[in-house]
Amino acid sequence: DIDSATLKALVDKVGADGTGSEDDTIEIFVGTPPGSTGLSVTFPQAGFAGLAESTSADLSISSQLITITLDGQAVDTVAGAATGGSVTVSAHVVQPQDLTPENQARVAGRPVYDLTITAGGRTVSDFGGGTATITVPYTLRPGEDPDAVVVWFLADDGSLQSVNGRYDAATGQVTFTTSHFSEFVIGYNLVAFDDVPNDAWYRPAVTFIAARGITTGVGDGMYGPEQTLTRGQ
Image 1 (cartoon, rainbow, N blue to C red):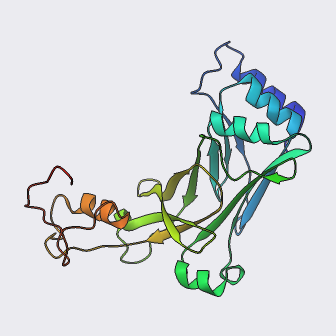
Image 2: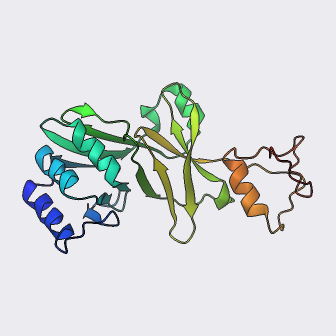
Image 3: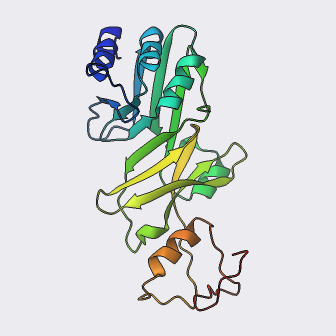
């Protein structure tokens, strides 16, 4: 629980130099003990609204489990959705048994995170043009190509939809950006092409875009690296 006095102190600190630029970030660190599978941070609605009205700053909730950063527009949208009560930001790791059998088959044992925001008792799913940036720790499994680690949104109809995200080998984390909250899967989608050798200088880039469905090659398991690009391509 974050009380009004703490929020006010943070807002005052942002505006102390009279700038309050969009580059500011208000960060709240939540200690999550080893083995934690979720967290929930609650703000008083009035204090959250004051944060939105007084600054253009991003709001970041960071922990060892997950880091959630709402940009200024997302903060404004959440603040505008609450007419009283409180604002709660929650995240937890979804256990396989909590998924439907169909979704268990779809995610195939990959990590799943459920992200929610409630404002005044109402769920805020869309950020009204704003975005949230999510960072979670991830350990590559044996033999995994880091460029083929992807992020999927698990839609209500069970489909897996690609989200803008990537694995960072330097930090051992997956970071993705979304305009709404729901369930997200840290997936793996290695697409290999017969004419892209493992030692080709361009293989990491091809692997990255193929894993995300940005390219499907030229057919028959071929990428066509020596072909001339058409205007359409």
